[in-house]
Amino acid sequence: MWLWVYDDDAAANEALSWMDNSETVEQNDGDLEDNSTSQWAVVIEPVFDAVTRASFQGMYVLRIPQLQVDQSQDLQIDLVSEFISVDFLVWPNMVIGHFKQAFGPNYTIARSTISITGQFYIGLQTLIVFILSMQIYFRTVELVEEPVGGSPGLSFYMKINGVPIFLKGSNWIPADSFQDRVNSDRLRNLLQSAVDANMNTLRVWGGGIYETDEFYSICDDLGYNGNRFTCVLHIIWQDFMFACALYPTDDWFLDTVREEVTHQIRRLKSHPCIIVWSGNNENEAAIASDWFSIPSYMKEVYVKDYLTLYIKTIRELVLQKTSVGAGY
Image 1 (tube, helix red, strand yellow):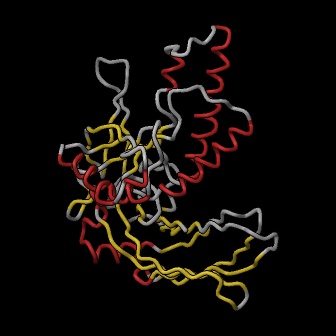
Image 2 (cartoon, helix red, strand yellow):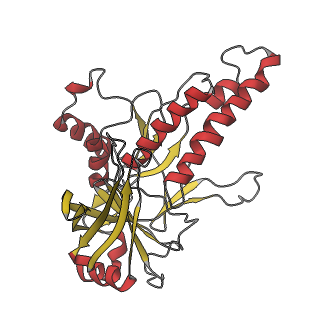
Image 3 (cartoon, helix red, strand yellow):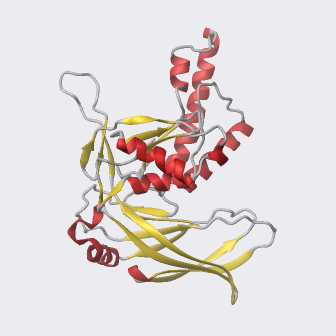
C-alpha cells in the first residue's frame, strides 16, 4: 500500500515529490506559506495480487485521526484490476490546522508523523486491516530554466523550498557486488560519509541497481535537519536502469519496461529525497558520439528507438504515474 498527499489543484506543479513509508505534501504555486488552496487530496494506492478469477465487491475505510478523516469508498477487485487507486479529500483547514499546531508558521518545511488505519471489507467480513505510522515531509522543488545574459542557453538549477541549491555530489554505485552483504550500518555509514564530505546530492547510477527502500529512507532522514529541509541534505537523482547500450523496442521488451518502471515509481515516488527521474546513463551520448560505430544508414533507426523507449514510453509513464509534476 502506498499513500501520499498533494494539493488537488496541482495538475502541472513544478514541485516534484513521491511516496511509500513517507509522504510529501506539495502546493501548486511554490509558496510554502500560502494556505489558500481549495482542498488537499489524500491518495491511497493499494495493490492487490489477484490469485482468483472471482470478482470481489467491497468497501475501503480510511481513518487519520490527526486530520479528522473517517471516510469510506466502494471498491471492486478482480483479475484485471490489480492496481487500484482510492482518493479521499481532506479539507484544507484540517491539514493546515494540524500541521501549524505541530510546527508553527513554518510548518511547510518540516515533517510530522500521523497514524493511518485502513480496512477493506467484503460484505460484513473484514478482509484486510493495516495500521501505519507514517512520516509526512513538506518540500517543493523547482527546476529553474531562464535566459542567461550574453548566452544563447538557459540556466539549469534547482530551488528547494524556494532556495536555490548548488548540487554537489557523486554517482552512487552498488555498495557491494553481493547485495546481502550490505547491512543497515554499512549503508548509513556510506551515506553519512557523503554528508560529512559536504555532498548534498547522489545520483543513483543507471548501470547499477534500484536501491533498497532503506537506502531512500535514510536519504530522507539525512535530508531532514532539525525542523526543515536544508542545503545540507541528500538529494537523489534517480536513473532508470538502462546504461551504455542500444536497447530494443520490440513490443515484448517495451512491455517488460512498462512493468519495471511502473513498479519502481510506485515504490519510490513518495520519497522527498528524489527530485529527478532520469531515463538512462549515457545512451544519448552513445548515439550522438557513435560509440558503437553504427552504420550511417542505420542511425535514424537507433534515434527512433531511443525516442520510443525513453521519451514515448518511460517519460510518459513518469508523467502519468507521479500524478503531480514530474522531473524527467
